[in-house]
Length: 134
Image 1 (tube, rainbow, N blue to C red):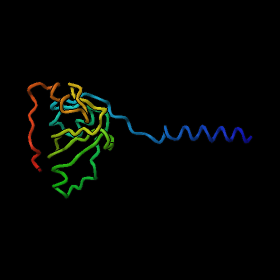
Image 2 (cartoon, helix red, strand yellow; image 1 turned 135 degrees about the vertical axis):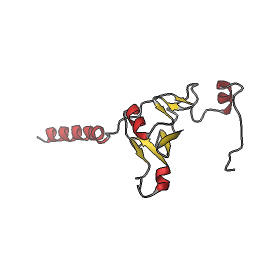
Image 3 (cartoon, rainbow, N blue to C red; image 1 turned 135 degrees about the horizontal axis):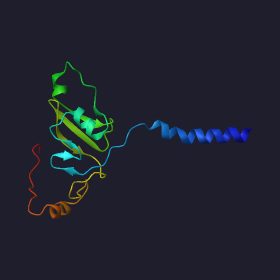
C-alpha cells in the first residue's frame, strides 16, 4: 500500500510541471529588415497573432482612456518577454526587438556576435554612429 502511494506521488510530481506550462513556444524564424518570419512591420497585433498562431499580449494592460499607452507600447508572444517584443504605435507594429540568442538574422547574426562578425556578414554596408541619447 505504501509503495503504491509513493509511486502515485512520484508520478503526480512528474506530471505537474508539464501541465503547469501551458504557453505555446515561440516559433523560431529568421529576422529580416522588416519582418520576423510571417510578422511584417505595419501589421496590427491581431494580424501578427494569427500569423504566429500565438496571442500577442501587451506588457501591461492598456487603458482605453490613456491615449499615450494606446499610441505606443510593446506586445509579446504569449506574454513572454524573453525572446522578442513588438513595438506597437497607433495600432501597428513598427519595430521588432530581439532579446534572445535563439533568434538570428538571415545572415545568422545573433545577439552577442562580435562587430567583426557583423562586418563580415554585411561587407561595405555597416555604418557606425553615436547613439542619439548619448
